Length: 259
Image (cartoon, rainbow, N blue to C red):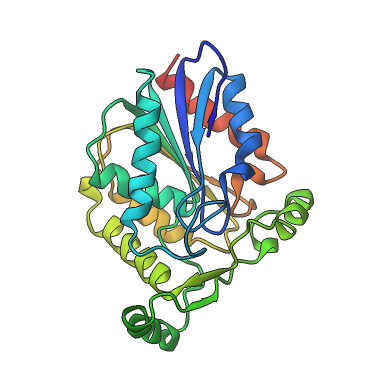
C-alpha cells in the first residue's frame, strides 16, 4: 500500500510488528504525509490479510524478502528512503539492513525493536518447541500478547481487541525463527550499515526487554545514532496518548537528514 503526499521530499517504509497489520498505522502514515513524505507499507507474511497460515513463517527470510520488496518499491522514486520498524518490524529492519545490500537508505527509526522478550517461554516450553518445530512446525500456541500491555490508549485497546485481523496464535516454527533472528542481530552488530539511526524505546515495556535493546544499541559501530527512552510509555509508542510528542521526536530526527 502506498500513501502519497504529493511533491514528496522522501519516502517512508513502515514495517509493522507481530500479530498486527499495516492498517493500524494509518495515523502515523498521515503524519508523515503532512510533513512531505510518501509512505509504503503492507502486511507481513502470515499477518493481516496475507495468504497462508496465520502466525506462521517457514523462515525469517520471508520477512526480509517482503521488507526488501517494499524498500525497492520506495527506491523507484529516487527520493531518500527512511525505514520505520516497530517491535518485530524493528528486528526485520535490522536484519534486512544487515543481510541485504540496499542503497538510497537515508536513515532508520526503530520503535521498541524486538531484540529480546520480557517474558520468554519457560525453559521446558522452549526445549519442547525446539523439538516440535522440526517434527510439527505448524503446531500453534497462544502468542501471549495482551492488549492491555501494548498501549495505555483505551480507544486503541478497544479497537485492537475487536480487530478480526489480529493474530493471537503463533506456531513453534515462528517462535524459533524469531529467536534465531534476535540472536543473529546481537551476534553481528558490525554488519549493521553506517547509516543514521534513531532507537525509541518504551520505558514501561511489557513485551520487549529494553535492556537487550540498549545493549544492542551500545555495541553498534554507527557514527550517527540516537537512543531515546520514553519513561512510563508502553510498547506501542506511536499509539500512546503522548504519540504526538513521539512523532515530533521522529520527524525532528528526519528533518536533520532531509531538510
